[in-house]
Image 1 (cartoon, rainbow, N blue to C red):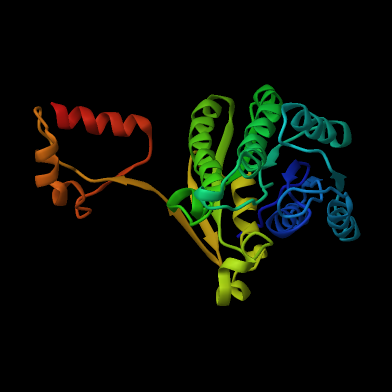
Image 2 (image 1 turned 90 degrees about the vertical axis):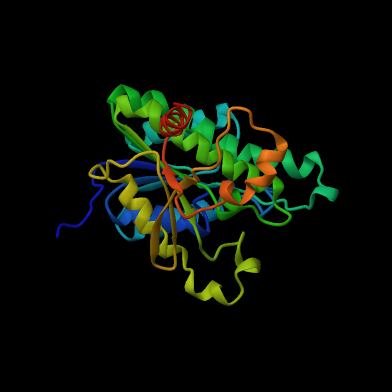
Amino acid sequence: MSEIRLDGQVAVVTGAGRGLGRAHALLLAARGAAVVVNDVGAALDGAGAELSPAEQVVKEITEAGGAAVADATDISTPEGAEQVVARALDGFGRLDILVNNAGILRDRTMAKLTRDQVDPVLAVHLGGTIWMTKAAWPVFTERRYGRIVNTTSAAGLFGNFGQTAYAAAKAAIVGATKTLALEGARHGIAVNAIEPGARTRMTEDLLGDLADRLDPELVAPLVVWLAARECEVTGEVYNVGGGRVARVLVAQTPGYFSRSVSPEEIRDNWAQINDLSQASVIATFQQELELLVRQLS
């Protein structure tokens, strides 16, 4: 079986100075891609900035014979995102792959939550994903080709105590991924998201005994596959961690139907509404509409 290669392609990886982003950048480069290693070098909460983490990753790539440049631009604004894409085009002449990985944490319970904990988290996770994609979009549409890998989280899919802002941003990234997949299909742009489980600065205090088994290097192979030309899947979310890769889906129960539905009917049929035994997988908005039409017919 032939090896997946990315020779001649150019990738941008945000938040690539440490953890998951670093692992993505190193493996993309090992498979032949030139990489823009974007990382502001901030602390976990987004404070401060230094180029050294990105420069260290670039050093590792170039010493192994690869091509890479370091970039410390803030990707949470449209202007910053455009600068990163310009860096790829100026340095390597093209852009094929975008990995939206950058993120920060400012966890607080709702009782203690302030705008200082919410706005920066949304700006980096969700804003960074949207603005980087916006900046890369015309490049991809002109060439009628592109691969985008976004990063969601179990917190975004299932919630996690004390992470309202983070979970909201990560859930929104799922919706953005599926919408962008629809918009990109006619332009040859595939857009998917990963839900990673890995030992990073963000998770090391949460994983406990699992940390040693969740190396970021076990997530990067999925990113390389989703970034590959031969991978044509789009609009999907994949859980990945510890060597396991699984597709994440949304399901809907058959529910209860009544044209004169009342609060009392809902109460009395609550068990049927929540019964998962005959649930259907819903992969698109259109499928949900079709299911509703069938039930109303």
